[in-house]
Length: 75
Image 1 (cartoon, rainbow, N blue to C red):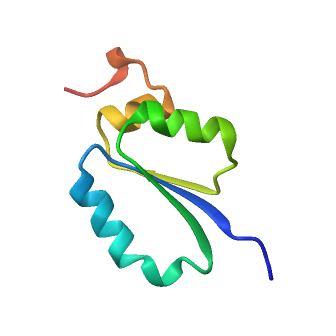
Image 2 (tube, rainbow, N blue to C red):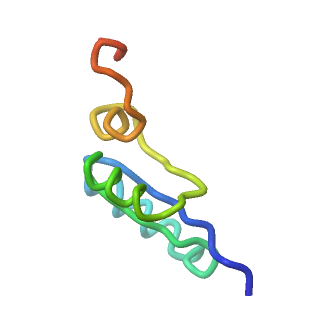
């Protein structure tokens, strides 16, 4: 069996994460999915695992993950 792709979902809205988890349940045999609700937790996981894909909506969580300085954010 081939190794699973590591996918990280980051969102500060737990309802959004729960929705993704429900929608993608059928992919759990192909993907190793991680769901976190803050950028700091995402950074901690990124330091431990190699993620193929990181999904996040724009905002605080995304900014913390990609390291965009606050002055570069759009109002």
